[in-house]
Image (cartoon, rainbow, N blue to C red):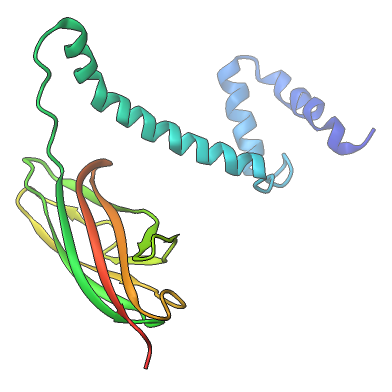
Length: 195
């Protein structure tokens, strides 16, 4: 039998004198930190899928928490609470095909508590109806805003090879305050053909 196959039994033998389960767990953590449990397993396609599904589950739970009061009100016959209004804004920009584009916009915290801002981009859409992924960079990437505070954000998009003949490119993104949707932003880029 290989030493790898005996590893669980070796660990159990090392933990047996520990006595109570908490001490056994502490000993197992110590062995792991000492690197005596073997190298960490590299990520697998299963782990990647598991991570993606966990993220999807968190999004669905957030959606469920927003929909639950509406469903409860409909079931009880009471008037439904007014849905939260999400501000929507379009920011115009111009670029030359193949060149990067940079746009500045302002994010303001109108809430009564501090928030951490995140940006969640979606697939871009060309004027021809084609969906594609455009790499985006935000500076600052995750600003923290006090109540009433504003922050100017720089959005940079790499348009390498996108719309070589020119056209319009819409870059949709969600602005999240502490993980909740606060604003929808569309950056509409008029792409000119390269000279």
